[in-house]
Image 1: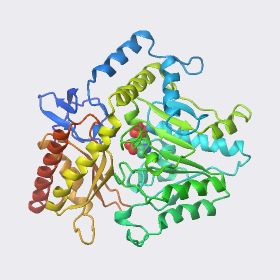
Image 2: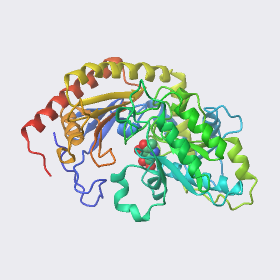
Image 3: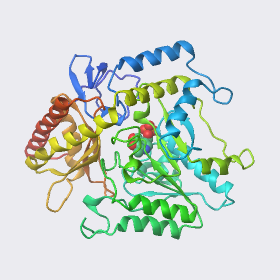
Image 4: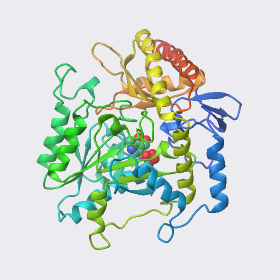
Length: 455
Ligand SMILES: Cc1ncc(COP(=O)(O)O)c(C=O)c1O
């Protein structure tokens, strides 16, 4: 099923000319279109709807807060929900003095982290430091600051001349090791690459930004065990901030509150959004270490001039608090871990049966499938095949929505599928999701065999 064009006479769609489904309602892990067709929300939108749709407790909390006070401006007011949410998020890092800033989304939170890094370096007397180092395979957001930090060539290309110069390091992308290593011979050359970028750019580097488990640019890619310890240590030695972009991996998606917990390493700054509010209100957050906050606080006012109209909105904060309560009170993190393991297990035979599945990887319910034309050489399909899109469309026919990632490699090739179902998904629904995806892969493979790719 190719999605039918919506009646979008005045609506500016994300992909101009692209077809869209019109949503009628959602319930649990399902979304329904206006013709009553049901779809499993297999990627929670884009790793957002972690509690599924129409969750009664969140709906109730939202209505209660809207009836109390929905909006106040953060230059004048602070609210109980914003205070409670900042306490809860600060407790996610082992730093009793951590502070939390709020935004309305991931890109705003990434931009906030970038400006914080600059403010920190100014506070340290390092006005020469302004650059951000990030990885070649990365997505950090759509605003100009976040896009400057983003590695994905396809997303950057049209705006190239307008973006801030960034420093690019290799990615801990074991399936396509940029250093030509194999897991048994690996000496974390990718960590050495970050270390050497930090040392080389001692003069102008403000911060290093990394996704602990990669999202849209290479879903599910993690890092060798000592990678983040080495990155954090190099940052500490050079007084460069280590920013973990946990917009996709954070707030429980990998079975831990923060994906960095898996590595036992604590960054100076953590960026969050998406699952933080489960999609019931636009919300992002930046957790800042007490050390960084103190350095900025002690400088003359004006070094960190920043804020958004919707920063710390009582409505979004109340939603964030209730989402966290539900996760805690229903033991959802352990469930995410168990369902993630089950999903990867269910995908193992799928990968065996479908030659185009080169790799299945991930943590918790952040799972990626990498699709290749040749499993032995790991050669990607040509972009004209539009494979990720074909799988997306074939999955729709099966009543499943996945998140297609195309052009993920620096040369513009690369097809991957992101699976990130709601945390509330049940075991039998995980199996059903995998079975639907398997059927979609069969259909997509058949269409490639029978159709000439569009160029
Ligand atoms: C790792 C990461 N950072 C930042 C962003 C940007 O977030 P938003 O789309 O909410 O602006 C995303 C969005 O997909 C993301 O995956």
